[in-house]
Amino acid sequence: MGWTALDFFLLAVAGATVFILLHPRLRTAPLWQATVTPLASIIGSGFLIIAPVLGFLVGDWAFAAMLALTAIAYLIGEVIRYNIRHEEPILHRGRGPRWVFTLERASDLALVLSYMVSVAFYLRLLASFVFQGLHMRNTLAENLLTTALLLFIGLTGKFRGLDRLEMLEEYSVSVKLGVIAALLAGLMVHDATHGLNLDLRPPRLDWTTIRTLAGLILVVQGFETSKYLGEKYSAAVRIRSMRNAQLISGGIYVGFVLLVTPLFVHLPAGHVDETDIIALTRYVAAVLPPLLILGAVMSQFSAGVADTVGAGELLAEATRHRVPSRTGFLIVTLASIALVWSANVFQIVTYASRAFALYYLLQTLVALGLAHRNGHGRARLLFLALSLALAFVVLFAIPVGG
Image 1 (cartoon, rainbow, N blue to C red):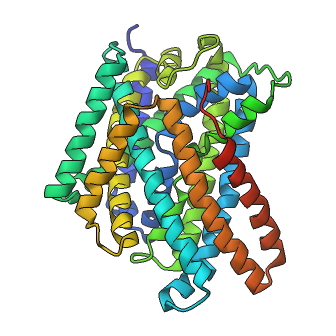
Image 2 (image 1 turned 45 degrees about the vertical axis):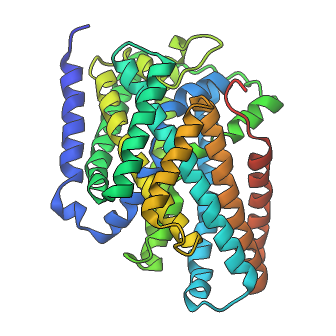
C-alpha cells in the first residue's frame, strides 16, 4: 500500500512532537524534567500490548477496563505521594519506628526483583517487534537476540558503566512520545471517517478474566520513580509532577484504547500476540507500523537500561554495598536472561505485575502504619482497601491465556 497525504501528515505530527519535546526551553523546565521521567516510565512497553490484550479479554469494553486500571494506579500513586510526605522525613533523620525501616528495605528488594523481570520484558518485546518488522517471527531467534542485548547491557555495566547508554533515554522518550502523538492523530482521523460503532453488550467477567486483568498492573507502573528523584527535586515538586504524569498518561491510555477499539474486528479470534498492534495500525496508515517499530526499539532498549541501572543501584544499597552497583548490573541481566528462556512475554508481564504489586503492597503497609500513627482516618481506609487489592494481585494474577 502506497503512502497517502495522511501518512505524511502523521510523520509531520511525530516530527513536530519530537522537536517540541527536545526544545531547550521545555527540556530545562524543572517541573517538566520531574514529570517526564515518571511519564516515560508509565507510557512504556505496556502501551504497545495493552489494547489487543484488553480487546481479547473484554472486547469493546476495553476502554472501561483501561479506565479502571489507571484509576487504581492513581490511588496507588496516592500511597507513594503520602510516603514522600510522611515517610521520607523519618528515613532522612534515621530515627523512627523500626518497622518503617524494615518495610522500606523489604520494598527496595521487591523493587529490585520487579526491575529484573521488567528488563526481561522490555528487551523480549523489543526482539518481538524487530522480527515482526522483518516478517520473520521466530521464538528461538527472538530469545537469542534478547539474550545478546542483555549480555551487552550487563557486561557494559560491569566493565564500563551505563552512563553513556543512559544518555539515549532522553531522545528515546521524545521519539516514543512523538510516535504516540502520530498514532493518536491517525486513530482520530480513522474514527472520524469510519465512526466508533462500539458493541457495548455486557462482557464476560468470570474469575479467570478478573485474575488476568489483575496481571496487567505492569502496564500502568512507573510513577514510583518520582520517589527516587529526591537528590534532584524537592518533595513538593515530585508529588506534583507524579500526579501530573499519572493524569497525562491516564488520559493517553484511555483515549488510545477507546480510539483503537473499532479496529478490534481485525484481531484474530481466540488468540492474542504481543505485536498485534502493528497489524491493527496497518488499517489506519502505512507509516504507522514502521513508526511503531522504531519507537518500540528505541524505548524498549532505553527502558531496559534505565531499569538495569535502577535495580543495580538499589541492590547495592540494599546489601550495604557488599554487592557493588556494577556487579548488580550484571546480576540483573543474568537473572533476566534466565527468565526470558523460561517464560513467554505474557507470563513475564504477569510476573512483573506480581512483583510490582508486592512492592506497592509493602509501600502501602508503610503508608497504612503511618496513617494510623498520624490519625489520618480516611487515608487509613484507602490504604487498607488498596493493600487487600494488591495482595489479590500478588496471589492470584495469571497471564493471558493462562
